[in-house]
Length: 167
Length: 256
Image (cartoon, rainbow over all chains, first blue to last red; front, side, top):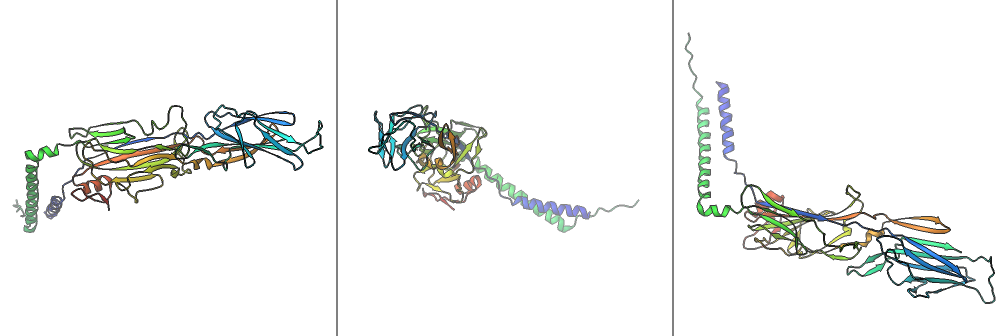
């Protein structure tokens, strides 16, 4: 009977506690979600095409990538006894601080107009076949970036490809 | 044979049992009384509104919604078409640095007033399995905010990837909140991560630079939550786990 008393007392305590519990509430809620995104195509490739005649390099640059438009520029270096003369017989290039910049963005598959780089000799010096000259021409390309209004610009501190060719 | 005398229950135990039974009975009666008023005709028409719904709107177009039905049976309608579907024209590639229009907002597509909040996630993924690219900062995915006085930021929940915004005003049925974003820009800084190598190719010295993150994809993910305005403070702490202060008479919601 002692066990029965204890059980009854416990049951009473449990019932008393349960009776004081607050009622449970549910609330109306809902949610929805969506996501999206795009890949970045940052790869780019350019090919240099050169012809040489009359002490002049005739240069064109082709954008061989499939998706990335680029800006391109070029300049030459030679020793102090010679000088380089640039010209663009078909236009499309302009000079700025020693570099020659292609005026427009080079779209995938496009080729620049010709840039001629001519070696000039000092007065009285006539070059002969077999003579060697140290001329380095550097070609660079960089990805086209845009400002918030969608206007393109080049960041030449981040050059993708740079070619150097000696002659 | 000995007659066994039945022992009576101790008087204390008996009294306690009677007391607990009385308490239980009294509490039941109280519930029954609430039930009687709950089911009175006037009150019944109010509690039959189970339609809570929320729709995510992008540049004026519905992109995702979830609306509960007329019956309190837990069924709902939902749909979604994904974000940024019209961001680029066909054949167009993403332009780094350009600010693309991205006006995101929320509409109350249910029939009861509600408070809303949005969870905005920005991150990078790579590969077929879309693994998260942890080393690339989500800050390069710039979502320009709008109406910051109405969409307040929960700074306790903000991380590098996640931004949580609460709309301070309740939305009536059918009402559209003011947008919480204006534009989306992918920062050109992602193109600064490069690897350079110098090669000799056909007599030429070639310095080739490879973009480290060529081919990675950015992701913008938005989740819109809605909760009833009735007992809003309790509802929000229960549903969203966030302490808020909601004052009557149209005063704005404040984060606690």
